[in-house]
Length: 510
Image (cartoon, rainbow, N blue to C red; front, side, top):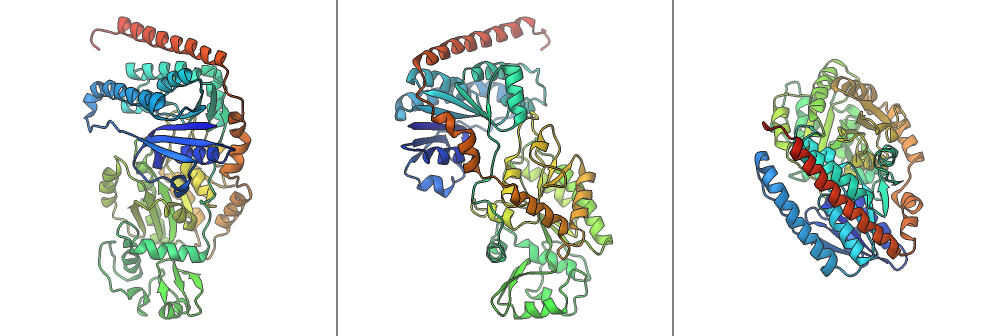
């Protein structure tokens, strides 16, 4: 059995499709062709598996202003269509199944429908979200824009022609069935095995590495030195290398006499850990709380909420002796990163340090495994998908504060494995509550960690239950392929009618 796994995006930043490829490759006599754009490096297991072949698409990308998007968009779709047709019909070995991620579905869904019909292959769609709702964000959330209306009609009509369907939430399954007549199997995102909580030795090794890295957490020591001294300090101020060991430091954030003695004799130390004279790795009793978040820096995540919450937490730490300093690390790259950095500089935080970092792919799960609590600011454009980052955090036993939206409670359960917030005030309140007494008193965090670990379900187990039976079916019958032609004809006709109807009814001033 040969299966094509297609994502019209960066393969290395498409974890779910990589996990599909690995699971498919584990099936008997299976071969996988993984297709997508080059960019971030895929998982090492993908690159080393002889049963998986990666094919990179050429990315037709131009940095055009928004006003020219309406001109460049159709041209880009035509070029992508021709490239995909050539790849599927002439370049790849003949395949039995093709699994395509949606979104993005334009033009992937239609091209795959045509190719799978010609090759008598099964056409399977993995619904991650609704593409038309993401497109609407480009037009200020206006779902009545002609491009958005076209995308919705296209997605519904061509999507219905799929032979099988997978989706990420029960809410999406319900929507697809009720609104579009599509029966889908739910495959919730699950953490792969390399996402797990770290023991103290692995935490120490990670902190040694990333505190030395230019793109990592080098600023943490100077920040801690500053708040442990009597005067104020910013993360960029220079301090003596051994300042945190100075006996004259009287701040409540400074090590006590016992820990100070251990630190003097330590052969290795970081802002969070040290190796004592016996060679054992110990967690520092005056370490900051480590809070992590990840993002693609796109408009569907409001980081103003985090900035405003950080201001409230900073004030609370200044006035409440039982709160620790807080380090917030945000990983990822994207278009809104520089704007966020500008806003961050204006906040003048002292006891809260926010760092943006781009970590090596193998360090990201380690950072989650070493953290104390996670934050997700994801707000679904459709209200039907769930953030993969939360799944990754749960895989590492990490409690999560998640922004509320329609179906987030399928994943985050209040006070069982995390908290749900809707604004900066509720986020800061929750973090202040859960970090009160940290790191000596972590009863609430430990309780949530234990519940997360008990209910952990890995990707492999869930995939075999929900998705594997789909690929064990006999090869698609020719009569079913002919029905694909009918769907294709309906799709073309429906799109044409929708466009004509719009053009006829469009006001002159538009």
